[in-house]
Amino acid sequence: MTQLKLLALDTEDLQVISSCCQDAVLKVGDLDFLASQKQFTLSLNRFAWELDGKTKTPERRKSILHFARVNSAQVSGINRADKEMVLSLLAVLFKAGDEPGGEIELVFAGDGAIKLNVECIEAQLADMPAAWEAKGRPSHD
Image (cartoon, rainbow, N blue to C red; front, side):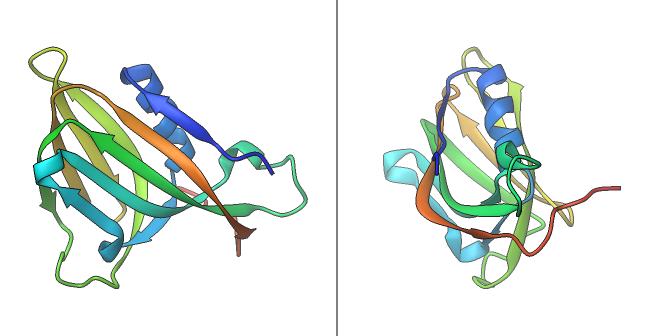
């Protein structure tokens, strides 16, 4: 089993991470912002799109998505008090600001979003050893 380890330092790199994380699921309790360390981390169960159609059964993998150089995080449409609330990540977007900084937006199903004000793009996606058969293949209208 090949585990993904990706690094994003620009918009194109971030688009690759976004496509790998599309339809990942996580709980609100899996979100962690360490303001003093300028880090934002998500522990998620991502659908392994890179394997779709190449294996007999679809697969989900435990992964960590980490952002560094985060100045602030703003949450909308997500009840942060409900730690068991399940979120479905749709996309990771970047809007340029004062170069090289800007805003990374994590877009979730149901109008949830997290906006990270960043000094620059510095993101990492890493699969953990845990993987299992997915109950289905995500689909979109």
